[in-house]
Figure: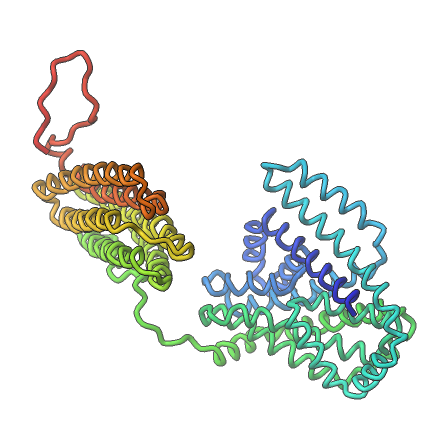
Length: 552
């Protein structure tokens, strides 16, 4: 049993290597290919078959298809057609592996290992090496599996258990379904069943019942993996499970009819051939019914009533694009909403840095996702608006709005990708800031929040006085950051244990807050530049009398 489990584990590991190698080598191309193939249900089946042949996992295809359905790229009916093809694809992989190719295993392992060693710095070459090594391990695992199942025939206990199981095909089906759901691979379980049949450990009736159970259980991992996704994504594995359950319910009573048809084949080949035939028949039977199945899945998994999504634009009216002044006013209101979301992230970031709790960090990360989606909507809307007939003032306002939205999105990224990463590191490593260090951080954070609020006011009013105040605030933050860094390094030199322990975190936080102030202060630049109150460079002119600085 240990030998069998080891061989199955090696087979699963080989499958994983092939899958990740294919994703790294051409995952984006594969997704686009599947997306293009969903314009027609027959082509969608072929696309699902091809994707599963490449990934060697119907679960991977299911998760990819569910994600595309959840994002609105494909409809539920076309996603179910892709899954019918995925079921055929995974059975074809089993049929290919049923051919005795174990002699290829050493060659694939050597070639893959050499390619991996020579592929340092080459992502595609290393991904291809993973595919070759994974294929070699799968062939080796099948050879080990065949050898490991031979001694099982001699076990009286195993024989008694299998005889009892053979008398209860429904229970055998459930056992195989549970096993498949546990190992997350119907391919591995089908090959195990075929190996047991090939070693004459189980009879053809029991082998076919177990094969049907493996097909049913193969739909469960994708269902569990999408439990927290949106309704559109969850409908795909739900529909696929319904299809497999109906097909298994029809096929189970037909096992006595099918067994004589496979009598002339070797037991291993017979199981794999039945697996292919079952999935091809399933695809042919249910392909015309993907529309009703999609409606059934939509009824079983309705869109949940949710609170208003902050990432959804509220003021970007497409019909207003013909009236630039109205469209600009709507885009202005939406950009202010973007600013409010970023301000909320910045205010909450201090608490995330202070407390030993990762929940605020996760909440800020979700808000950043909303910021990204709203920023994209604003950017696309302003791009459409910019294609219209705008006068000089309107064109300038659109460009300034675009620049401010981009800067706000950058601020959100700094908070999420940098500040929250630092907060996570502090929590997980159980680090504690020195009180003096955190007071410096609090003061710089307070001034940064003030600058962001001033920037929002400047953006609304295009006020020259506020713009000058914002630039002065940026200079003040820069000076605070410089002084805080110097005081922190002085504490480090004096040997303050807490300052030494968190030095990298403190310096990175101070730097990030300074970067945020620089991004939000950029809104003042076009306002001051228009009235000639902005210097082009802060560099001094060497060799000339010192010029008096403008009072900005």
